[in-house]
Length: 155
Image (cartoon, rainbow, N blue to C red):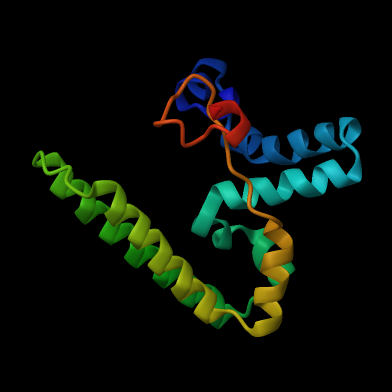
């Protein structure tokens, strides 16, 4: 969203208090246009796109009924992953781009597994319901070797 861009916030002189209210206002406006099924799916896609960081969201914590101990474990896991991500970036700054994507993918997978290990079976089931079926985001105008094309499009 344009409104989340720091330079736009500065230009519009948006206060921290206003910025805090924006997501709720957007959700309220969307709820007036989209039906309940659409809103549910939009939330699922949003959580998928946020990835592991979604576990820091207060609403997610509440919906999963996370304990304080679980929340602290999740924060530690995500902090450690952030440090590892910085190390991967440092390697890349030296011009070493070899296997960069694979390293990030492996780190995300490892972090996801650690986070799942913190959840109870009931919370894992709830999380799967919260994120729904996998959604593959398409980016028109970017050709990644036809990976994003559907089978019939490639024929």
